[in-house]
Image (tube, rainbow, N blue to C red; front, top):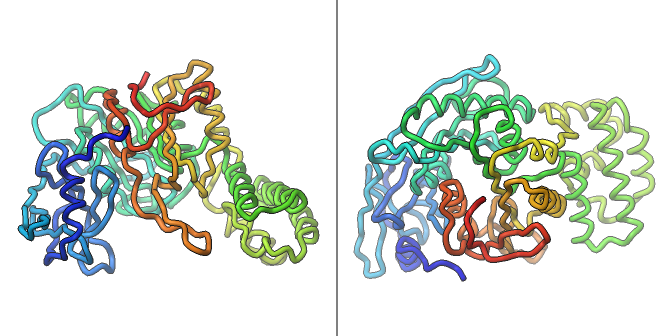
Length: 439
């Protein structure tokens, strides 16, 4: 059974009938009426006329001062329009923030420690947030403030080559894991005496990076949202096959999809030294099949549709210039991991299909590894619920209810009740409502 809606949710739902209120900039942070009645407000969105992103505990997202939004900003007050038309101010939490520059692999990175208001708490968990593949700055992340609002200390940092950090943008897991390990050391130094357990939360690509960082640092836990326990090569293959199922391809066409995956894998593994002839044979076999014009995968669809001459000339620069470890053995990393691990899966994830990851997690659980895994139905990458359009595409509607609270409660080792429609996975494939605490 889902938990009773928090007061903030009831107020937000009721206020959606109200019109917009004049907006002025708020400082990014947590704006609160009570323990469970709060909203997180991010920095002004580029090109949005000063509107700022909002995120509520139940996963509903919006912006200030536009359309039907009940939220408006003025200095350090967030105003919410109530059903009767009155406006109620919610003040900003007086969080403690410490900006810092730290060094990893001879590169200066920009970080920020955000701690809840109040005195030091030697039992409060400390979380380092590990990036996905995005190139955006992270210092004002609404997700960081969402965890802070739930009583955690959070260290965020701009990924190398993004925001205020130096260096070149990369997707090399080894280098990114070194950066995450350096971030945890810096976070521990800054928060000394004011925290208990310390570890990582990683989303999407962070599912590859955070566990690897935990094997080379003093992490006490790792939490992952919508990540994969397969290699980047396998991710592309799983996406291709998932698309083939959605298009109802027959055995012959599906075999061609498998051949396409193997050909592009040869190109990537050899850094485009081998595989061109193999891909040419696959192109001839596929011919003018209609699905060839739309299939994507992570990269194979684009490689299929690029001319052979262009692929030889610029293929490596286009597809292999970010240092990806194409055969990264994510399962081996998890087998080496000795600390508790949380893994949250989006059941309908098109960008990161979950079948192989789920089976690996169940195998690790059956082997006695300290793994907790949860599955949210009807959710896509990012743990978002969605609306399916007439052309089959999906439009995200909100972060699924329960996900944000599950993360914080698990990290605090204080799971209670249910979390939206989350199912907790069991070693023998059984599923139960998410009610029990972490191991």
